[in-house]
Image (cartoon, rainbow over all chains, first blue to last red; front, side):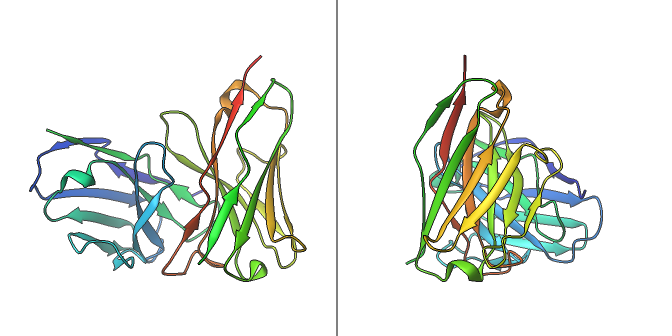
Length: 107
Length: 120
């Protein structure tokens, strides 16, 4: 199985900050990676697909980069609605695997 | 508009079986794989498996192998996830989701989630 190591597990930041979340795959997954945002009681919402493509309707302050084993999600200027939990998901091979999650909290 | 509508919350006793449905609309059911994802309270997301509605083929995560059965009924455009021998650790929200055959679509679609509570 491909392990997805996501860091940090939690992050405290302020509105307007730039934040970066990283996912590292235990083996190469090309660009078969998505980033998800989840708020309490809601289904996950994908922000980025194919590692770096912005999903339709998602604000441009979100961006993704990486290929192979190292991936990052960057939020360029945090907004109040961005405080949530973020996950990466690899869909290169079965079983699909999620990162452990990053809880983004208000400082 | 694509919609995945799941069945309602369930309460089950340990050792029982639960079967959750996911009715789709807005696309051709057999075009995309249907996946199921588990989320225990306060925990992360875990991929359980998928079904190809076109031919019924399934792939399961090893953790759930032997206890989970995912099926698709093309006459009603509904996918099902059945989990047997329930234990307290199976208390979770279960989501159905799809994003094409290889999760390649630029849009993905999720059900609203179904809470399963396992308690004696």
